Amino acid sequence: MRLGVTASVVAFLAALLVAVPADGAGRAWTAYLAPAGACRSADDVAASPAAQARAVGCLVNWARAQDRREPLVQLPALRRAAALKGQGVASCGQFSHTPCGAEVTAAVRTAGYRYASFGENLFAGPWGQISARDVLRAWLQSPPHRANVLGAGFRHIGAAPVRAPGLLGDGDAVVWTATFASPR
Image (cartoon, rainbow, N blue to C red; front, side, top):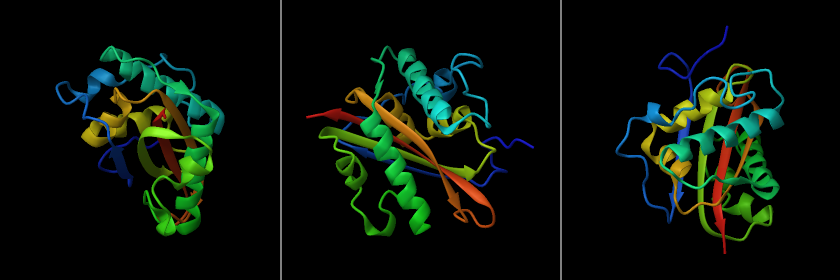
């Protein structure tokens, strides 16, 4: 059974926005969700983590195009930062931008990205049941998450799903992190 991101699904959301104005407040979130088929692997819960991460990047850029925003370039350094944050959340068992007390920007600095602006979206849900589109749907419904997705001050993105056993109770969870940034 595939679970969507609804009130019946246990999902936690968190967003961090640093030095970027709010965006997308004037339109319904549905205006930013790409139609089925617009992004490869966006609806495939069995796609590889790399394919799902590319789909998140595609979905983010589709949303940005609706506000005539420049597309974000998917960078390996920010993908690594996103994976590091997800691994920190999984290993600490804390759904937080600061798992185990780490600084909020520790993962992006460890990945070697020197940023002028930074934002981060997190999502958690049941492993193997959440698609890239489900993640974007949840982020777009939340004004702080949508502001990161549409942030005019960002130029780059990295996204990664990480398996987090026991994070949501019994069974495996997935922690999605999207790291948004612009260089110095």
